[in-house]
Every structure is written in C-alpha cells, then in structure tokens.
Image (tube, rainbow, N blue to C red; front, side, top):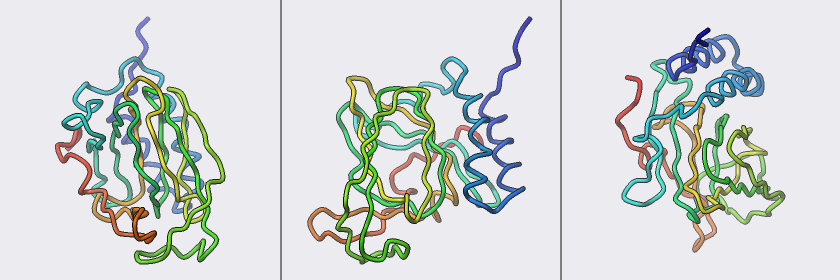
Length: 199
C-alpha cells in the first residue's frame, strides 16, 4: 500500500486554510504545527537547490509567498559555525529544523519590551539557549518572544523551513547593530533568493 505524500503544495494549502480561518497568531502557530510535522516526516522533503548556501554563506531561499500577503515560506541555510547575529522578528513564525543542530539564543529587552522600533536601543539579555536537532519545531511569538540569534552549532550545514507572517517585503525584521547597539531595519527580501519553488 502506497502512502500519499504531503508535499510542499499540500503544506502551503493547509497553512492558507489556517491563516484564513483565524487572525490569532498563537492559534495559527498551534494549528500549523501538525501540518509542518507531517511534511517534515517525509524523507528529503526539499530539493537540493533549497538546502544549499549562497556562495558558501548563510541565506534564505524563497519557496512561496501568499498572494493575500498573510504569510510566506522560506528555507534558511547556515553553513557550520555561521550565525544570524541578534535580531528581531515582529510577526509570528513556525520553524522546522531539517538538518544540522540549531543553536537558538532567546533574548529579552528591559526597555520598551512591547514597543519595538528601528532606532531604539538593543541592549539585550540572553534568557535561554536551546539546541535543536533535526525534527524540532520552534516558534516566533513577538513582541516578548521576538528577539533571538541562531547559529549552526554542529559540523553539518543547518537547514530549516520557516513559515512567517507577512511577506518578504512586509515582515518586520530588525537587526541589532553590534557597534551602535541600536535596531536597524533588515528587510527579509534583501537576504533571500527570489526564485520561488511554488509560483
């Protein structure tokens, strides 16, 4: 008996149904999780093109953008030892670790923790460090759980699938400048390839 596959189109269709049915970010994350898990449980769910670094450097590969602008899907690739630096996501996200060991440091901010804007100070306090093997699903739940830093901690290239609120152009994404200790705008559209897997 052949088991039906749950491919990327099926995952996108399921996420679309969830985001259309509720505007609550927490519920969206919870309801997307079993669909992402089902997709991740398949062997080699992504073509090699979407698991490869960009000229040896970390990058993201665009997989799909919702035409209504409510979510997008990217794969993120970190060569061993590379890091994202501390940054902030201002919209929800569900992230599945596909390969490598993901080291995620979560941060809090004492000043204006619920009002995060470009130009503000980003003196952050590390509150937790999590090591996630392949098969792990993690979440972005801003504003209080929006600051983090990720690093490929193992010898293997880190690959993860990110389902994020907004689009590559509208997703709120700020980088903590290490020199000025201030938040700067860091659009997702500038750090991902734009050859989507699903048009």
